[in-house]
Structures are given as structure tokens and as C-alpha cells.
Amino acid sequence: MTRDDGRERVAIAVPGPFEEGLVVHLTHSTPDPSLQFPPVGFPAMQRIRERIEIDAPVETIWKVVHREIAKVPRWSKNMLRTEVVGGGPLQLGSELLYVVKLPGGLTQDLRLTVLEYEEYLRCGGSIEGLSMSGTWRWTYRTRGDVTVVTYETDVKLSGMLRFAGRFVEDQVSQDVRRNVEALKEYVEGKKRR
Image (cartoon, rainbow, N blue to C red; front, side, top):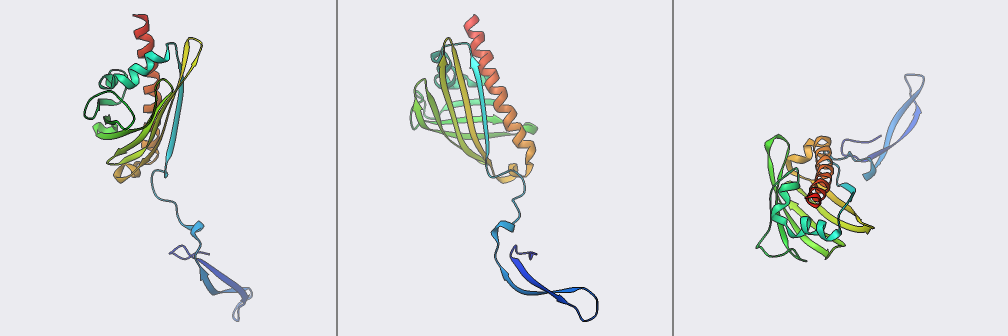
């Protein structure tokens, strides 16, 4: 048995004087954190991972994703504006501003900080926003004439977004999938031109 404050109550059962059966008497209480209720809404952290093969050299894909930051909205399905804060090329320590479209016509400014940068292999870092935080990472592996691109993100929602729960979780996952597919279409389309 547990009390409203989540602590466990230990009880003993003894025969009762007025009825056939047992009466429960509380003997003592102990805290039990495993009996706490989970938080309402979005889970603590959601990991999303999408992998796609793109028929193009890694240098071409790297340029589209990490050098032409201002052009990301041309291929991304949910970005309104992207920029390197302060200008200049993307490098370790760079800060990016991404203005993201959310359901219901809302937008959110996300600040991305580059914490790992190894040209043509990986680029990743942290995400901070008013109601979202987490990590992001692009990795690249060449297999013949094809580049295997993997995008991973861990997203934690806060504020009002966390109460949208499963809806927002599904939306974020769909956006990541659509963006990776759009990247493939954009890069392979440029190659055909």
C-alpha cells in the first residue's frame, strides 16, 4: 500500500473482533521512490536516429549541410531560417540559430552549439530553446560512390510543449525523417543538373 506522498506503508493483518476475516493495522511507513508517479507528458529524453544512403560524395553532402547554413531552408521541411551567429564558416565552438516551424503555425528559435567537428566524418553539439533542449549529431561514412548519412538527436521538451506528449514526439520524429529524405532528394537532384 502507498500513501498520497508516495511512501510505502507496511501493514500486518490480524483477525478482527466483529467479523470473520482480517483487519489491517498500519505498523510503520518507509519512503519508496520507485512508487512515485511518472511525470505527465513527454518522456525525459527522446532519441531519434535516421540513416540514409545518398548517391553523392561526402564532400558534396558536407557542403550542403555544414557550409551552406543559410541555404538549409531550401531543402529542410521545417526550417524557416538558419544562420551561423556572427557569420563565418562553421567550426568547433560555432553557434547556429535555427528558426523551426512547429505544429499550429508556431515557431521556435533553437540555438545549436558545435561541440564536435571533424570534417567529412562528424559534426554535432547541443540544442537549446525556450521549450526544447538536447543534442544533435551528423555522421558520414563512404561506401563506394554512396555516402551513408546518419542524423541523431536527443530531445527533451519543457514548458508547454511537454504537455503535448506523444503528439510532439511523433512530430519531431517525422520532421527528422522528412528532413533526411529531403536532403537526399536535394543533393541527388543537384548532382543530376
